[in-house]
Amino acid sequence: MIQLKKIQFRYPESDFELFISDLTFPESSKTAVIGPSGFGKTTMLNLIAGILLPDKGEVIVNNAILNSQSDKERRNYRIQNIGFIFQDFRLVPYLSVLDNILLPFRINSIIKPDADASSRAKHISEDLNIGKLIKKYPAKLSHGEKQRVAIARALINKPKVLLADEPTGNLDPVNKLNIKDILFDVVGKYNTTLITVTHDHEMLDGFDNVIDFKNFKKVTES
Amino acid sequence: MKQSLYLAYCYLVYHRFRSLVLVTAIGLIIFLPIGLEKLISDSEKEMMARAEAFPLIIGAKGSSTDLVINAIYFQQQEMEQLNMEVGKQLDKTNLGHSIPLLTIFKSRNFPIIGTSIDYFEFRKLEIAEGKNLQLVGECIIGSSVSEQLNLSPGDSLVSSPENYFDMAGVYPLKMKIVGVLKASGSADDKAVFTDLKTNWIIMGLGHGHQDVVDLKDPTLVMQSDSSNVRTTAKLFMYNEIDGENMDSFHFHGDTDSYPVSAFIFVSNNEKSSTILRGRFVSGELPDQVVVPVKVVEHLLQSIFRIKYIFNTVFVLVGVATLLILVLIVTLSLRLRKDEIHTMFTMGSSRHKTFEILGLELLILVFLSTVVAGILYLITGYFVDDFIRYFIL
Image (cartoon, rainbow over the protein chains, first blue to last red):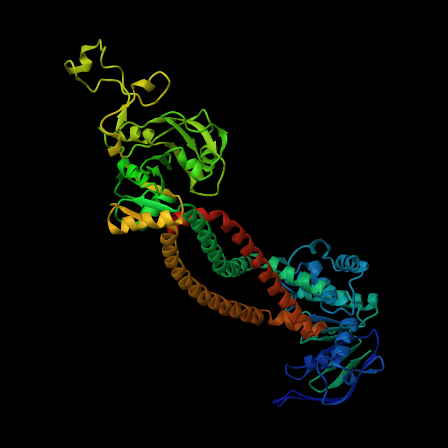
């Protein structure tokens, strides 16, 4: 479970200020966060990931207060617990699909690329229907394929939380639905908590919670 | 570290053309100063070793550098010739003995050196295959000549004509190869040695032709009396010396007046050497005497001055390359901002990012050093060519 309590955050030398009085993301839930640009949706994801620290308040993940941890502890927490999916995929251009999926193992030594890592990467690739692409480089992939690779990379470390920042923003309508289905499948299959930031109101069907940052209140709750 | 190394390797392989350009550029910058240093120091050693082996050289008055280059490195220069009489005068001094050198002709781009048997003893040259010179028309070849032209005893070499358009010029002489010298790592490896007389025959000062006393064909004789026979151009001239025609070869005039390019003078001792040089200085002996070591030292001083200029240029080019390298790395970091940010977001540390980037640079520098090392080793094989084309 993730809890944001009495959060107050301000970027240095900026008028922007984010207040979150109390927000809870239950385990294995699917939450969509909507709202206009500049209202702090991505900032909230970064607070949950421990990349940003609140000026006031607490970010509590599985009973641990994230903002009381050191940089190293938060990095280790991220690599072990969080999977990231970005709007622009953020694949590393010089790595093959397989190496991109295995990237988390190569950038932080807290998780070792065990013997199963490679077979697990192949297994996830098959699940996401990109099994035949593992030797290709990102430049040779379509947008839909790139986003599947990004999802596979987010899942490789068996994350407890999947943070998706506009994961369908760069996709055509058919691929949007495909990616949404994949994300929902993943939550069920890997028992993950999904928090998705989106601008697309057509994508909101099926989420357990939808949080509108404009009013900053829950508009739907299943 | 292993994972960072893998990521660095992937980056360099993916951008292989860029990596190759960087490795080549850095490799050349590392190689150029050390390569030039090796070329010059090896050349210096080789040239000085050769110069030290030749105590005194006597030649016609003129450039002492040309004389030394011609006489000890066999790089044929346009210069005045001495004659054999000078050698006799030198030997009469009883201060040592002279060894003649005639270095005018070439055969297939290798110099033909007319000399005496003493030269081989003086240079301690040994025969690797075949035998020493015995008869006129024979030659001994250096090891490089044998290797490059694939020649061995029993084969033959033809002297190159001085001028292809000189129809009245001397005929090329076909010389029989009787021996191959052991490699000495000097100019001797790249020369063809003959007796002086063979060289004079190439020059046209001696020749062999069909017997003119018992000529049956009247078209061969222009004029004849009891002491002289003048023949037409139809008379057959021999261009190869063998057992059957050897007796027909003869020289016209006094051989003491025949040309010699230079004499090596092997003095009895240091005192004799000083006395001989004094006689040249006082004008008692005409022509000039040179100490090759001093001439080569003077020649090398000019090379060293040029080396300093080159080294300065290389330092400046190195600094410029380094600045370009810094620019490339900076621009590369800017281009890779998203990639670095993604890694950080996922849980990488700044230390890890610097480790990956540092390893990329380290691999590039390592490969550049390997390239420079290979070029450095190859440089050793070009010392002779460097001396021939850039120093002499």
